[in-house]
Amino acid sequence: MDITFLAEYAVPLIIGICLCIGYILKNLIPTDKVDRFIPLIMGILGIVINIWLNMAFTPTILLGGVLSGLASTGLHQVFKQFINKDDV
Image 1 (cartoon, rainbow, N blue to C red):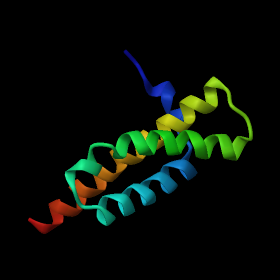
Image 2 (image 1 turned 45 degrees about the vertical axis):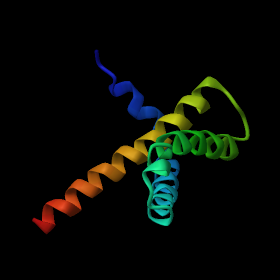
Image 3 (image 1 turned 120 degrees about the vertical axis):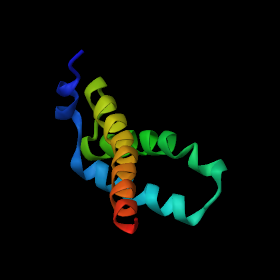
Image 4 (image 1 turned 90 degrees about the vertical axis):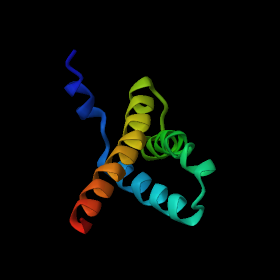
Protein backbone atom coordinates (compact mmCIF):
# COMPACT_ATOMS: atom_id res chain seq x y z
CA MET A 1 0.00 0.00 0.00
CA ASP A 2 1.46 3.31 -1.09
CA ILE A 3 0.75 6.14 1.37
CA THR A 4 3.11 8.72 -0.11
CA PHE A 5 0.09 10.77 -1.20
CA LEU A 6 -0.28 11.80 2.47
CA ALA A 7 2.85 13.94 2.15
CA GLU A 8 0.87 16.55 0.19
CA TYR A 9 -1.32 17.12 3.27
CA ALA A 10 1.60 17.82 5.65
CA VAL A 11 1.85 21.50 6.60
CA PRO A 12 5.41 22.45 7.65
CA LEU A 13 4.22 25.41 9.75
CA ILE A 14 1.93 23.18 11.80
CA ILE A 15 4.61 20.53 12.16
CA GLY A 16 7.05 23.14 13.49
CA ILE A 17 4.58 24.66 15.95
CA CYS A 18 3.46 21.27 17.25
CA LEU A 19 7.07 20.08 17.50
CA CYS A 20 7.98 23.06 19.69
CA ILE A 21 4.89 22.82 21.88
CA GLY A 22 5.31 19.05 22.25
CA TYR A 23 8.94 19.52 23.25
CA ILE A 24 7.94 22.10 25.86
CA LEU A 25 5.20 19.83 27.24
CA LYS A 26 7.54 16.86 27.43
CA ASN A 27 10.19 18.83 29.31
CA LEU A 28 7.84 20.96 31.43
CA ILE A 29 5.97 17.97 32.85
CA PRO A 30 8.50 15.11 32.90
CA THR A 31 6.12 12.31 33.93
CA ASP A 32 4.98 9.33 31.93
CA LYS A 33 1.35 10.30 32.56
CA VAL A 34 1.65 13.24 30.15
CA ASP A 35 3.96 11.53 27.62
CA ARG A 36 1.30 9.07 26.52
CA PHE A 37 -1.11 11.91 25.68
CA ILE A 38 1.32 14.03 23.67
CA PRO A 39 0.36 12.47 20.28
CA LEU A 40 -3.33 13.09 21.06
CA ILE A 41 -2.62 16.68 22.12
CA MET A 42 -0.52 17.32 19.01
CA GLY A 43 -3.19 15.82 16.73
CA ILE A 44 -5.88 18.06 18.21
CA LEU A 45 -3.57 21.09 18.22
CA GLY A 46 -2.70 20.44 14.56
CA ILE A 47 -6.40 20.43 13.65
CA VAL A 48 -7.05 23.65 15.59
CA ILE A 49 -4.07 25.42 13.99
CA ASN A 50 -5.07 24.27 10.49
CA ILE A 51 -8.64 25.48 11.01
CA TRP A 52 -7.25 28.82 12.24
CA LEU A 53 -4.90 29.15 9.26
CA ASN A 54 -7.62 28.36 6.69
CA MET A 55 -10.65 29.82 8.51
CA ALA A 56 -12.66 26.81 7.36
CA PHE A 57 -13.31 23.19 8.28
CA THR A 58 -13.26 20.52 5.61
CA PRO A 59 -12.08 16.90 5.56
CA THR A 60 -8.87 18.06 3.86
CA ILE A 61 -8.18 20.54 6.65
CA LEU A 62 -8.94 17.85 9.24
CA LEU A 63 -6.52 15.42 7.59
CA GLY A 64 -3.81 18.06 7.13
CA GLY A 65 -4.06 19.15 10.75
CA VAL A 66 -4.04 15.74 12.35
CA LEU A 67 -1.36 14.44 9.99
CA SER A 68 0.90 17.43 10.66
CA GLY A 69 0.37 17.23 14.42
CA LEU A 70 1.21 13.54 14.51
CA ALA A 71 4.14 14.03 12.15
CA SER A 72 5.63 16.39 14.73
CA THR A 73 5.74 13.56 17.29
CA GLY A 74 7.51 11.33 14.78
CA LEU A 75 9.93 14.11 13.91
CA HIS A 76 10.70 14.54 17.62
CA GLN A 77 11.62 10.86 17.81
CA VAL A 78 13.90 11.19 14.78
CA PHE A 79 15.71 14.15 16.35
CA LYS A 80 15.96 12.30 19.67
CA GLN A 81 17.57 9.28 17.97
CA PHE A 82 19.94 11.52 16.03
CA ILE A 83 21.02 13.43 19.16
CA ASN A 84 21.44 10.25 21.24
CA LYS A 85 23.51 8.65 18.48
CA ASP A 86 26.10 11.41 18.85
CA ASP A 87 26.33 10.82 22.62
CA VAL A 88 27.44 7.18 22.27
